Length: 306
Length: 285
Image (cartoon, rainbow over all chains, first blue to last red):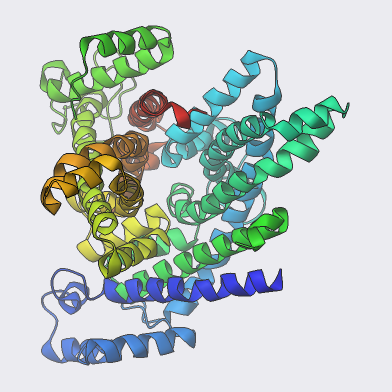
């Protein structure tokens, strides 16, 4: 198992190198002169020269990249053009909000989506199966920036159950988490349903039933464990999606997370800030996927030897 | 994308569709939106940009079926006009990855070697980003606008298409008829276009039908964030963004544009699922 984890960690290196290279190149692949875009057309020549020097744009590309890597590894993501604060500090201020939201949504999605899928796959009642199908289709099709507004309309403005202007505390987390969780729960329910149905067709399930095991044991011990691999993959991918999706949900509920920061960075062409946010979210996404890979190895010993 | 089917096969398609009323309804909804998009001005009672004097934030009525917004514009006319923009978004965001991703996968899979390694490494790096984030990163480079949002969403879908196209190309490449064509002296271009391309198309179409709903959602989301369509453009996501400020007093502003997106994406997903089952029964869930 240790060897397996080490191998996965080594495989992470090229991915992270690629991600940092891509984020580094964001500034260079931009059409037009990024300095002009950032400072506006009427910036003085000294200002332009100062920023160009500060960002190191006057040096050869390779030198710039190595410098960028070195800085990044030391946790220096540069300085925001607008606020003149360190990008890392800006992100550190906002990240807990986004993580809190993403974790809450992921938990909800897992505890709602997976049981729904299992129930839909094992029920003999077609009505229940249809309800799950409709729910998952709706969850996949409703944009979060609409479902969020509808939830505010119903639960905050009409019923007054949840605050709308307050972002602190658990009560303020409920509606955003539900909004963000809905599409993820829908995907998980769908995936679980088809994965469990697939496993239930296998020979060893027939054997388990034939030797007289309780249906509950067959489903939860034999089928679900084997069905978990594709479900986990999807859950891992969903978590990355939730981090990015939080950008939209935060904007709906006016939560002070990474979302607003990202949008402002893009709108004001604040490249160091935009690069920093993109890098941080992408890195988290990569690590979550690594964690999923390691979990596979725990669930399915066969995978460790491939 | 019109695929000419023999008559007998066409009958089979219709027969299968008749057994699935939900899928038929979804196709009908999509058809309706296409008609609205093409002939929108005929149906919309007002100009989507015109401010109607004395009609600020009117609730839905016979005169204004979806009410009016904070500036006195008819929401119904704006939603209808929005379907036009959404069709443009759908076409652009699907064509870009279809053409670009298809080409990358085809070339990488066919020629192999260093070219394959380099191209697919770039694709893998793009896949290391969640799709919305990748689209936002591309928008950060291009700058916010509706057209750039469409390009960004299209580009962000490229790696998935490239991977699929490459996989199919690899398996088709070793087929007997490709070997035969090679033995008969057919050139690379001929083999690529005549023998491989037609075979990698079905899985790409399945991807496209499954992905178009997601692309629409992401593009509208970018507009909601203010990174895509800008006011006063009657894009559905941008309309919802404007509506947020008036939620307390004008629920209709936030209701109908969202309903339109949801209906379209829902229908696309239902049709996409059906098409996937139909084109590739092995994938049936």
